[in-house]
Image (cartoon, rainbow, N blue to C red; front, side, top):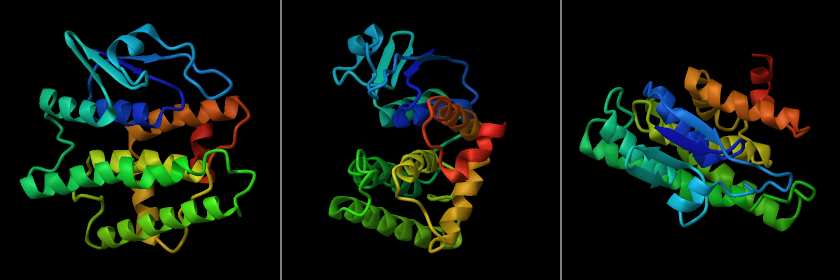
Length: 222
């Protein structure tokens, strides 16, 4: 089994963490990454499998997949233990919706911050940070009676943790206004697969003289 990802691929990191959580043996293929933050030159296997020309790509024998959510679903069917979706149908549906919201509702606000670090007081940056803060508040309410977003630890936690790593990098940090969410971040971040994948990503940033979020700087010492 091969997973094609990149040193700063949020979606690739999601898949990589899930595979480590499940104890799957796989080869992690890091595709080229240039100084302009592009995955260039494109890896031929990525081009062959994914018409969107993006990582992650998973190849498992004659199964060839792209998109981190589709990879999640395949991993859960192929390696059901340990489970990373809740067992109950309704709970599983809620977890899937949270994973979708992380990628399609929350992360687009983060994307709007790309390239605005020099002007974080501009109206677009302020609006994007405010939208992220509202999302944090909604998750804070979810955590009132649970340790993880959908009950048991799940793909929803993996997805939002990685999206938040990029949000913090771009200026949309969590604050003491959401203490339960901060505690959740500590719980997820303490998991060995998360530390492994995110630690490697943070070391890549540091080695390339790029800022590392304060809450992740301890990973540079491990």
